[in-house]
Image (cartoon, rainbow, N blue to C red; front, side):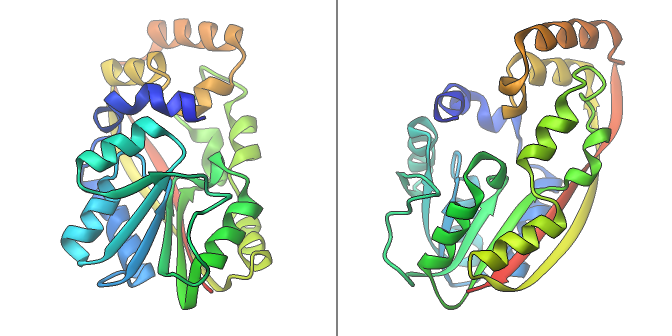
Amino acid sequence: MSAGFDGLAARYDELRPVDGQWWEVYESIVRLGKLGGQRVLEVGCGTGRLARALEDLQLARVWAVDVSPAMVERAKELGVNARVARAEALPFRAGWFDAVVMRMVLHLVDRPRALEQAARVLGPQGRAVIATEDPASFDDVWFARFFPSVPEIERARFPSREALTEELAAAGLGLVRIEGLRQGRMMTRERALDVIRSKAFSTFDLLAPEEYDHGLRRAEAELPEQFEYHFDWLLAVACG
């Protein structure tokens, strides 16, 4: 996955723009984590936009890690205190943080080890905040009709609400609260094809080459000029 995200680093912000819906999720993360003025670790920081916003708007002290060197370099360009590290082996001492934030990360890591590490670095009453996609809606993913194996692939990677509750508890994180958030979205044909061709989502790297090529041809032939879809989030908070 590191190599895949290294290749996307230059276009990552373009492919995942900061818009009103990005800020809606940001506000939920801040609210659940009570992040104002806190010592925060962001795991899987990407290009550093969330970390930068937490520092600028919440006056938090933020450390950030990502497995991709290219993403970390982009984050450093924003002034983020970022370093290359894996979620499963965080280079920080126990109890160092008030909060750990993981946004769209759980499907890319060894979840039990990553959550155990999050619990380890949290101080007393520290909070782990998770933002991930709800697998209950994977049959409705907009590109699943072109790539039939997508729902099965994604359900194997993303935890359900019940599984996430159990995994947080197993890692030593209690008092779990999970909220759902549905966002309605609009996409143009041009943007949808760009997402598929650039393999903007890690899902595309997991498809068999034949399925990817066939699905791309179908999308090129069948996508309308624009279409509506929805994205369903699971937003969880758990205490150390």
